[in-house]
Image (tube, rainbow, N blue to C red; front, side):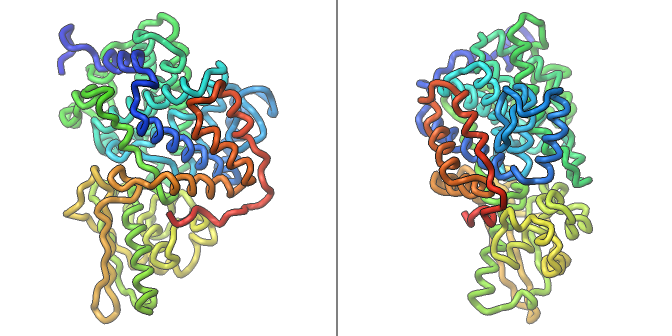
Amino acid sequence: MNNDDSTPPISKRIAAFAAELSLADIPPEIVDHARYLMLDTLGCALAARGEAFADIYAKAIVELSGVVPPRAGRAVIGHEFALPMRDAALLNGVLAHGLDFDDTHIAGIAHLSVAVLPAVIALAAQRSLPGARAILAYLVGLEAGSRLAAAAPGLFHDSGFHPTVTVGVFASAIACATLLGLDAKGIERAQGFALSTAGGTLQFVEDGAWTKRLHAGWAASTGIACAVMASYPIPTPIYVYEGRFGLFRAFLGNERMRKVDLDGVISEFGMTWRLMGIGVKPFPVCHFNHACADAAILLHERLAQTDIGIDRVRRIEARVPEGVMPSVCAPVDTKRTPTTDYEAKFSLPYAVASGLLRGHLRLTDLLPEAISDSRVQAIMQRIDCVPDPDSTFPKHYTGEIVLTLDDGTTLAHRETVNRGHPERPLKANEIRAKYQANAACWFRAEDISALEDFVITIDSQPDVRSLEPLLRPAPLRSLQNQGNPDL
């Protein structure tokens, strides 16, 4: 693709799609998928209510906002106070992404709802816009983000960048510009501003740091800023994605740039919906761990059925895609000895050990006492992570567990398509159950139901501002639920 007058910039093609689309143009099953992604995202944010990271980030962002809550402003999910629009989007993104339980675009390896939805809700409430416009903007943002992330599958990670913010800021900016009703030129400018604000490295994986949680909120908050700035005639870059210093070349380098499917970003707009590649997570850990976690849980059941104790297992081999090993298998000593919930979320040995020992992997399995359980610690020392030569990654996040017993016999289970993948999606009732269980960690059943009803009918709601009281239910005083159900 050349940067000449005969080839319209990708940003122009995306802008034309966004500006011309109406909700009536979108197939009902696509809109329905978006509603359930919204519901899942809000449930993840509600479940974060009592987490240590939520409290610390809330204090920091309140100070950053310069206001003393409670104060009139935009809703903070699961909290009683309000914040200015961009600060609310920032904190809500942190809350929604903080448990690593939110949806993932499988091919693009990007968390997009947490980058887009907090921005859309805050901006739509600020402007008292109808729910139909909000879900349209959300759909546009998810579709654009899905296409951008999937054009470079795994390449951002290979370069050390987290596409949830690197790509997410574009998805958020496009969504917000669409929500504001900007014309195609304005939506182009929003993408130009996003290019100057994208970032987000993966160093948190090695350090067990909490900065990843900021990425979604930063994309949401910045997307609002990009869209509002774009409503003014400020010149911005034109070749935002394919240019000499555009998104792909600047973040991936010339060698990886050759692998980017630029045509895929813009092909079949409105005919093929890439957002259907977004899967809902069944476990509150890194998506790369899910197939092996499911395999371990099924092997736990087989061991129980045959009355074989876990103490008879001498070696555990976890076969995973080679491309995910730097994130969840290395360095091996650290992954075998996680000490915090965040380290455990990115530890394949922990996911496998919990599944084998307990038969589940829930939010409560990430509490300090669960992570420090001496039985889990012992099992992790027996787990070897090895590359899976038969993996279809990044199309699928495959996983296989092979147990070697003390008499030399082996038991194995393979997951060729991870649950939650578009080829094996969670059903509507499973997503509702996940939402309800997450929300029930801290909130009452009647409040949970009211929010669910609003989201499932959002396109018929006259004003998104009426959603905000539902996002701030009075919390219970103690943890009511014992973690997400076995989905």
